[in-house]
Image (cartoon, rainbow, N blue to C red; front, side, top):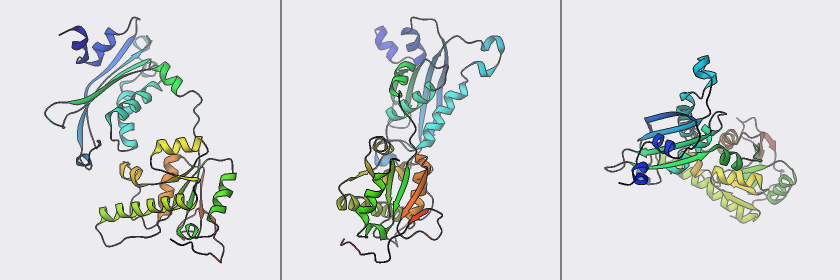
Length: 304
């Protein structure tokens, strides 16, 4: 077996040594096993899978050995915490996505210069299915140049607002403000009687139907389903209407309880996006303390 082929299956530490010309220190994590739900296939939903993580981080020579102070080094905990933190954000379909996010989190540490990262699934078939990436601080910095955190306003449209003749006027009024915003909507029809899991999915799909109905009523509105689409829309002046099905089901800490009160779902979205405030258009939930723009008394229903 040639050197290239041999190195392809070696621990990332051997790969790092073979591709580094300068003198650097390395910290490594070997065969770190974590269980989590991940996968693109339906059979992988609701199932915990074992994953093995092997990570090498190149760092400049530090004075930690002389000072014996953990603050002078890149702690191993930062590496394991990066894994846990990204697994806690949301359920992911791809190991590639998880690898990218873990590498980016590690490269935020001031000592990290380059990351070699291999993730393998241990429970899918007879072998190990995995991905390996190498990422450098320089390319990470370039990818994040000019990026600023966006704190949007969440605008929740109740069923009364969705049926109001003033709907497009409200959207124009919201659009005139400079602050980025995301629209969430009530469901136009609710379903009851099914088991809890089935009913939850039906309710989420009912809300998504409302989102698509809104995009039909006002073509300026674009239905979006993922965090990436939401972030892009806020930065590019797009009127984004949130379709919650994917984000809620993929979340590791999704909203708890019945979804008959979609305004509560808007509150969950606000937390995910670090929103500056929530504005409800329509009749407010009596148990909510959200700011309200009320519908006029003579609301006229739009044909469905």
